[in-house]
Length: 222
Image 1 (cartoon, one colour):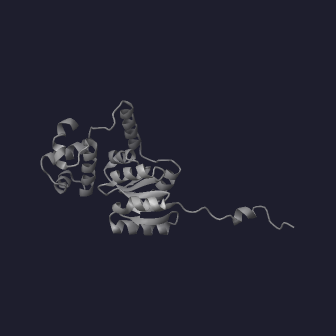
Image 2 (cartoon, helix red, strand yellow):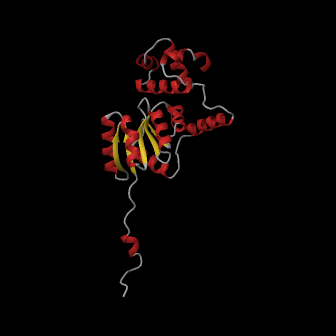
Image 3 (cartoon, helix red, strand yellow):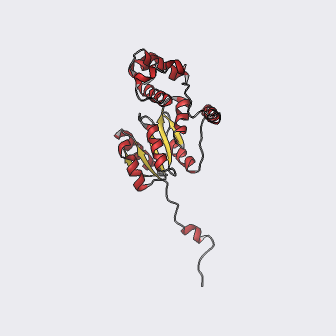
């Protein structure tokens, strides 16, 4: 005689496994701190703690559901593009990103499926991961407007916008005056890491590799 009760199959069903993530940061404290926070939260399973140098090969071997990428790394966006090219099915989520809406749009353009800024919490990051896995992106109206502007530029035939934001233009001008990142940060009353992110964005938009090359483009960017 069947002794099962209605609903028993449901109660005996194993819970769905947690999504797996790999954390990429060149700062050991960031990697370990975020891993500890996610472990306490319990909704994501951390597979690997990686540096930018080891990331691509390690991700290719273990294939997590998502990659958490430290947005403060100078090569963050370039690494995102390499990961997307090699493993297009993996969702990349940036964390700790500074530079405001223009920087977040640069992240989306470079293949990040979601992102949290430098004020984001673990709750925000976990929510961004689950949203990205569902194919959703939660962003501010300003970011949405800039994304639409970028798409409009692409549909008009622009392969990559060459016009700098107002802040990027200020930083480019100060670079042209010979100021270091620290001096620019003091002059504009912003953090050195924010300046570093802006400089990296400027280099990418102008398709140049050295700060000295920015000067020759100043007339085109303002």
